[in-house]
Length: 279
Image 1: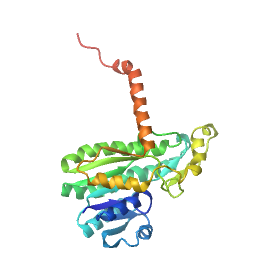
Image 2: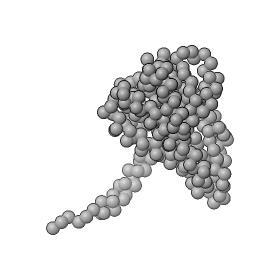
Image 3: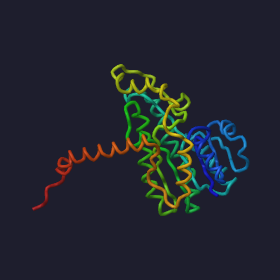
Image 4: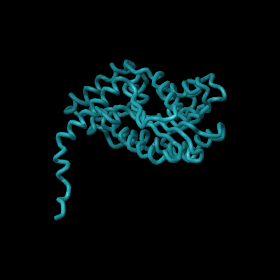
């Protein structure tokens, strides 16, 4: 039996992960800004579930939630940094306040929760961390530059964490979902840049206009994604990256091919920048 600590647990991936963990006999700490939404999602969970209020941008709330988890269950075995915020719009269209709000949740919020939980895992000399990135963290598309920027940050942070924590018995995995049928495109999660620039109508503008028609039509099943994540947490070794969804696999493969092609094209230029050998 493991103790799971999941942020953004009232809906979407977070709720599905909590539900799957509980179904397998694990215990869970389910956090959300409004804890009542978690109670509503899990009315019959019983003593295996602890619901804690948590705005991930509040370091003190993060510490309090982690302390409550240890007080109730004695440990934290699996951390799922799932809470997130989206922003859709061309990079130039995104205002400073809008950009900071996304980074506050997706990057600084992840760091706040991680800082609260890792001391517990280090004392245990064991633990699993899943940081929710996105296919946009490796293959970002038009209109998603700011959101993708936060996920690129998550990828870099997570890679370093994996190396730093491995000798301490803690494994770290970056989760890169493609498009899944959650409420990510709803107004509760996705924000639209207030400024609209006509010159971007054929790029970011097209993405913005098609959002409503794509909402809740995504091909990915979040319950199946949750099953995979819990499977991986129960396996002896976790991957560095966990791609989820056929669309994610396709986009990552295309991105890797493009990087290799461009590297080969510009290889001689790259190599030409070294100092000349001494004579």
